[in-house]
Image (spheres, rainbow, N blue to C red):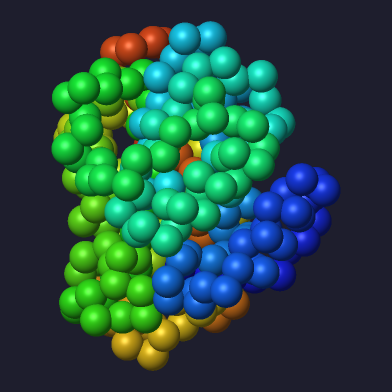
Length: 260
């Protein structure tokens, strides 16, 4: 994943959240830390999901991390539903719960330190949201194994698209086989109804030599797209085909994600 110094647009509350994370005595190998990527995920949540939700909407989140993206989005919206976040990392889970208490959001955001896929049957959600692990590598022997997204970086993303939730917001990376991922979404009955794209630089996790070498190999296979300076990260809102008259933007997004 990525880190690039993009401080424009940060509110005071967001700066505090990010500063608190930085102050924690946890290494980036223990708790995922990239303020810029988390900020973009939060923007996508705010604009593509939370501002459009009805009062009683139920949202489930795969991989809540330290909770900052959802908390930032909640602080900017009038969302009145409930978000259930699932996070296997006990350290990240405790950080998230602490921040939720601090910002008095316990009635809107609940973190579960358990497997996301085990809680699905009891939570018939309106939306599924995630910034899923998308680092491609031959195996998970990397700086932070939980960020491993499979050989092409898209394994977990595809699994989430198989959950069959009506609305799904996912972050999709240009170096994690985006074309095949979007085509897989179509095969699962989804269309792209909206998206946001941000240019990012390779950072701590994606610059690990083993990971970067593999991304270079994927580029040779036309499964990774990036330039010398940047790659694109997209926040993509999927809806089930036939759910409304909104046009399908899948082809347009494929062109954007593979242009580099």
